Amino acid sequence: MCYVYILECADKSLYTGWTVDLDNRLKAHNNGKASKYTRGRLPVKLVYFETYDNKIDAQKREWEIKQLSRKEKLNLLES
Image (tube, rainbow, N blue to C red):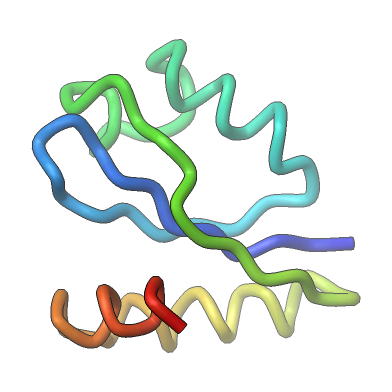
């Protein structure tokens, strides 16, 4: 199982990523070990995720979400 996720950072910015272990990835982000972007914006909280059967589909969806505007991402979070 693979996950595409969106985090809300302490500065209210949004970060999108993918992983095979959502709990460990979230812990890594909050420990400053997962992403250069989130390292300076701690703490982060999980606000959205989707599940996929394989990493290719998850990576494609991650890319699609990253192309969205902030407003479109916020609309996705509300759905």
